[in-house]
Amino acid sequence: MTLVRRLAAVPIALAVLAAVPAGSSAAEREISVFARIPESPGLPEGIATGPDGDVFVGTNPGGNTPGQTSGVPSKIYRYTAGGSFVRDYTIQGQETARALLPAYGLQQLAFDGDGMLYALDKAPPRVLKIDPATGRQSTYATFADVKPCAVTGGAQPCSKTVEDAPPFPNYPAFAPDGSMIVSDFQQGLLWRVPKGGGPAKVILTDERLDNPLGGPNGLQFRADGKTLVFTQSLTLPVGNPPSAASTRLFQTTIGSDGSATPARQFYESNPGDGGDGLVLGRSGDTYLNSFTSSAILRIAPNGQQVERIQTRPGVDLIPFDSPASSVFQGNDILVTNQSVFFRTSTNYAVLRVPVGEPGLPLFRPSMTGAPAPTGSAATTTTRRTPRLKLRSVRASRSGSVRRVAVRGTLVRPTGVSRAAGCRGTVTLRLTRSGARTTTRRARVTSSCRFSVRLSVPARRLGTFRVSARYGGTSVLKPRSATRRIRVR
Image (cartoon, rainbow, N blue to C red; front, side, top):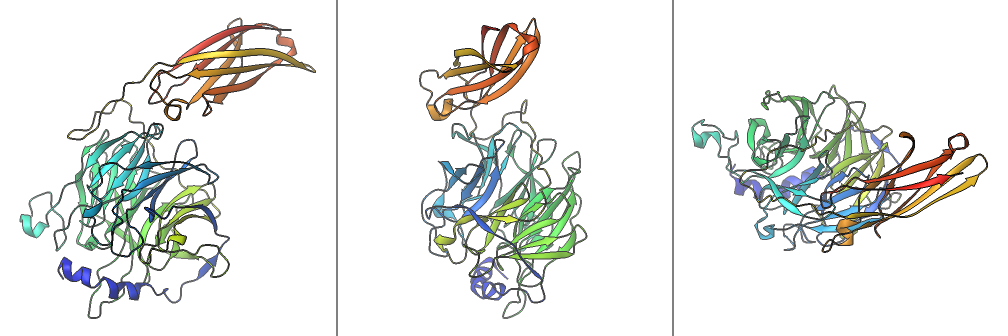
C-alpha cells in the first residue's frame, strides 16, 4: 500500500478505531482539570516538569479544522505545580505550512540535569534546546531522511519500511550517559543523539514498526538505565475494508556503546487502541495513552493489561479526547488532552489522573562539559555579573531563641530584564568563629528580592557573620555578600 493510499484509508481506519474494545475492564477515577490550554495554537501534546516543579506543555500548530494547520507557530505554556499560568514561549523557525496530515508541530518535552528544556519539532525535524529563564532557543539535534532498505540495497543507514517518509522525531528519553534516544513516528526507527547534541544516528529499525501514520512513539528507560520501553502506535491495517489496528509495546536494551538489541514485543492491545505517550510507574507498570479509544491502558511488566482508565460521561468536567503525553506529579499523572481528530477546543486541557503510585524517576543527566552540537545553530550565552546587597540584617528575641532576619536584593546588570534576571536562589549561612550555625535557602522573587529568618540558640550568643551566596543562572554569574551582626 503506497503512502497516498494509506492516507486515503485514514477516515475508514479511524472510524473503526473509535470503538472501545470489547471485554476490557474500565476503571473509574476522580479525573480533574489541571489547566486549560488556549485555543490557538491548541492541540496540547508534550508535557514535562521542571526542577522547580513547574509544568511545561507544548502545542501543535493544528488549529480547529481537522487535517489543516493554523499557520501559527507552536507554543510552550508554563504553569506552576498547582496549575496557575506563568508564561509562554513561542517557537522560532517552524515550517508550519509543511506539516503532513495530521498536522503536528512540537512533540514531547524533556529536561536535563541543568534545568534546560528540550522540545522535539517535526518541521524542521529537530530537537530544540530552550532556556526556561530567558526563552533562548537553539538547535540541539537534527534528523535525516532515511531511505528504505530496499532502495539502498541494504546499505546503512536504512529503514525497514516499505515507503519513504520524512523524519518525524516524536518522543525523547535521556540515557544515564547523557545521550538521548528519540522515536521516529514515520520512519519506523529509533535514533540516538550524542551527549551535547548534533546529528542523530539510527540505532534500531524493524519492519514491525512500519506505519507512517502510527510508528514508534512514547518511550522511557526502566530503572536499570538500559532497558528501553517503547510503543508502536498502530499496526498496519489489512484487508478491504481495513481491519482495526492495535498498539504494541516493545523493549530493547541500549548498550554502553549506544547500540540497541533487536526489539522484543511484550504486549499487544485489543483492536481499536492506538498508543501515544507513556510513563512508567514505580511498580514497573506502563501507563499508555490510547489516542484512538481515549483511554489510559495500564500494563504490567509481564504484558498483562490490568486496567483501562476512562473518563465518566456527565461526571468528569472534560472527557478524555485523544490523550497524548503524560508526566507524573506525585501519585497522579498529568495528561495532555489533544482532541487531534475532532479539534474540540473546549477539550484542550491537561487532566489530572490519580493512579495511586509515584512514577519511576526519569534520567536527567547534566550536560556540563559536553561538546557543543556540530552543524547546529546553537550559540553560547555570556553570563553577566549582578550585585548582591544585604539591605537589612536584624536580630530579635523570642523566649530562649534569637532570630536573625535577613533581607536582600539582587541588582541586575543593565540590559537584563526582570523576567530573565530575577530568578534563582540565595543560600544564607550564619557562622560564629568559623563554625556554621544555621543555613537556609531563599528564592529570588520576581522583584529581585529575597528574605529569610535564621534561628540562633541562646547558648550561642555573640557576634555572627551572615554570608549570602547567589547560585547564579544561565544568564547571571554567582555572587556573594557578607555582613556582621551581634546577637545578645
